[in-house]
Image (cartoon, rainbow, N blue to C red):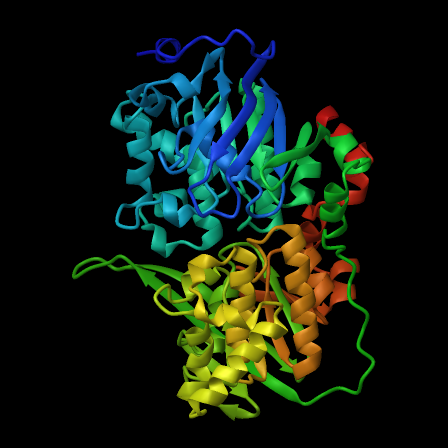
Length: 557
């Protein structure tokens, strides 16, 4: 059945916007009884033409992803379902389309890049097999042609060793590499409409720039329309033709990118723009140098995957002799591309992973894989995955102090104090992780890390998945607890704007090595290495792009 035959199964729409590939009119989506509001989306209207990019921005819970899932037919009906309006794609209302025909459109004419690649990838299937499955569902190709298209798609998203990636399982890849696999899968069939739900959240700035270039190239070659959902205004300023701003299910402002970003009319839009990380290096701390707390010497780690009795496994060197020091009260930012070894280094320092060689000296004393109990704590990128869903948040926060011998009543009181410190009601101690938003769960993760009174916190991409307003609040929280507890921090991030704002020094990692390390102002303002200059140049310059100069230059190029 051709795409035209599939769409013919739905009702023609006579009131669609002329020349619009996708036209949404008066869409309202119901939430289950007991939710925080009756409608997830209330009377939303927007349209996208061929070759056009519409960005939807807003805080978590504003209804952005609900619109995307409604277009894809992925709402968990009947509890969450459209109750009014229409979604017109190529002249036909998708809401009247039978499920088999709707399923045939997904991936073929309408592609989607999901925010969480691990929820969309099968953990027990190799990457190549999963991409082949997507091809088999929509096109008929020979085995050789399928393999060529799969490897080409992985190469297009700048994945190293595409053949090795295709033979790997998702768990063997970094978060950024898994996201690029999902992008390759969505672009492989060259859909007419591409829905991108936070597709660059886990990507470093250079890979993000490459992916945005890839999407623009797809638009230029095939006239693909893009519905781009993001909380990153840097991305919005680079890629958007038009912008819609959502708050609590309603579109509060919409217009061209220059209008919305350069001359915002709504207070909420102005608030979001004001929360963008400024990227200005922090002022140098004038206090006398403090003693060295952490001394890392020639650290090495190699992962071995696959292999068997008569076959050698594939080796990947995550760390190739890393050395640096961190002083008391200092924040060191660790930046670099996905797969450069940042998270591996952080986990080794936190005692969650054993290095193959080298030394980690903490307070001048060498240790093995485990640090002194409670002295080093970690804040993870995904707080949902790091919190036990069967434990209340109070129990999770109390676990560390209880393991160190603190009396239960004192541990309970400390959990309440810490919840209040991170901006949550102490009564939240009796609730479970799923009852909180992503930003609130990250605050709980910070409270849990502080519960054991650590001297060093390893923060692994702690704000990458948060929208800009919540990100600003969490960064302010990190700064305040750092001063209050005189903490040292190893801050792992792919966002140089955040690193510049948070860190005293920045270390740049590439392929398992630290290639440049120095004061934040020097690394950002006068980078020595070509790779560092590439990272700095890839950071979206929001002010210049809003003025329209950079966007017009990109179109002209």
